[in-house]
Image 1 (spheres, rainbow, N blue to C red):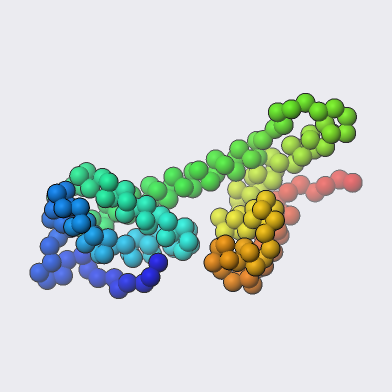
Image 2 (cartoon, helix red, strand yellow):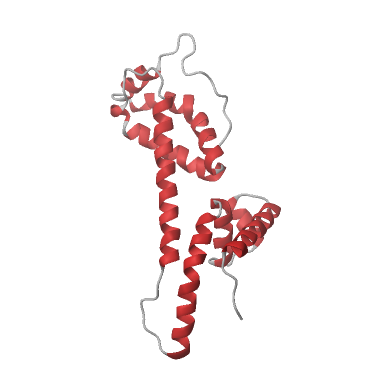
Length: 192
C-alpha cells in the first residue's frame, strides 16, 4: 500500500465523519473521504499484527465491510476510526480462526481408505505423523508457515517463494531455516 500522510480526522473546516457517512447513504462516492482519512491508519494497525501483504488485503476488506455497513454506523460518533478498528479486528480474528482450523484439521487428518500390507503400514505412519506436524505448523508464524508450505506442498524454489511473497531471497532462506528449526524441536524424535 502506498504511504499516504496521516492526518487528523477533522481539520478546521472539515466535515466530521458522521456527516460524511450519513451523506454516503445517498452519495456512495462520499465514502471515499473516510477511505482517504483512515485507510493508511488501519493498514498500519493491521501490518503491525500480520505483516504488510495480509494487511493490504485486510485493509481493503475492512473498507469494503465499512462501506457495505455504513448505515449501521452510529452517527452520534464524530470519528469513524474506532468503528474501522473494530471491523479490522473482527476480520483479523476471523482470518486467524480460519488458519488455526485449517491446521488443526491437518493435525487430525486420518486416512479414509483401507489399504493392505506395506501400503497400510506406510499410511498409518503418515497419519500418525500428521498430528504432531499439524500442531507444529500451527505454532509457526504465518510467514514461516507460508514458506514451509510453499516448499513442501508447491515445491517452489527460494526465488519463486521470494517472488510470491514479495520478500528478498535471503529472507526466505532465513525464515525457512528458522521454521525448520522450530519444527525439528516440536516434532517427536524418530526411533530407528
